[in-house]
Length: 388
Image (cartoon, rainbow, N blue to C red; front, side, top):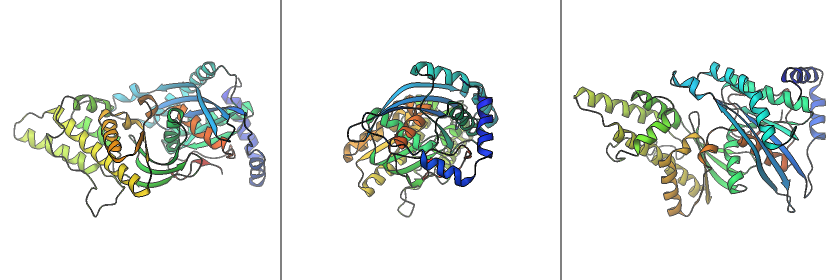
């Protein structure tokens, strides 16, 4: 395997000598054309936050032209422990951890898949932490150049939707609820090869961010989601009537707000302590968690009903939460909506999701991404694949 440093020099030398017109011609010439029975492998790299992931898929084109996507390798290294004492992700630490992990993880994934190199390489190019994205994208371009295979720059959010297809099949006309420490969004997904449409997003804190801030307020530690979830199982979700943000008739139908809920938790704690009363942490966690899950599921079902979609997909780290999954299942069953949620491992960041997203895009004829494309921390959700 050619070293990343040598391959990166190839990337830069080739790119600097290539005109924009020539890059367009080359890209058009390499648009893949597939026939039934064709098979190829896609390697995906994820590095948008604190997980370094490499996943590999094998794609086989079926008689009807649709792709059958099989996950053949999935390796993840997390720097979570390095961030724990800071109470949150430190971008510089995350970037350095990606640098240390990417080569060992790459070797492990290739060994697991039993291949020397893939037919395509994909990477998250946004949204995410700038430095973290840069490490994964640069590594992916270097490997693509060194191996002489096409590169695909994929939207991180598209990966969270596509990874579900590895377990539940292709996606058509669905609503996706993506909930993590950095994102809380409702997306309309017509297919895995068409642009996603943002229906709603948080106007302040993401849901996962609210979990972390409440956990910090209670002195529970980091990350807050699993800790609050565990304590909530011992508490009464109706003990404290916390507010449900943006659920009034005049509010946006699909947007979210969790800043007010976080503040309400802080005021409750202050009031109890000022009165000399003991805060029942389990009840508080259960009531907070119920407020979050209530709003998330209510708005997700509203989006399904308003668009006539009969499928709800949930992704992102917060969708590992047991109460959110249970309430979503309960409400979807009553509404006649099919709920699709990956296993908890695939709700958090991983390379398999990026390989999956690229697999469907490539199978349906998407052109490769130029090696000179930049990582974009604010990549719009409508851009599933960067092509310029």
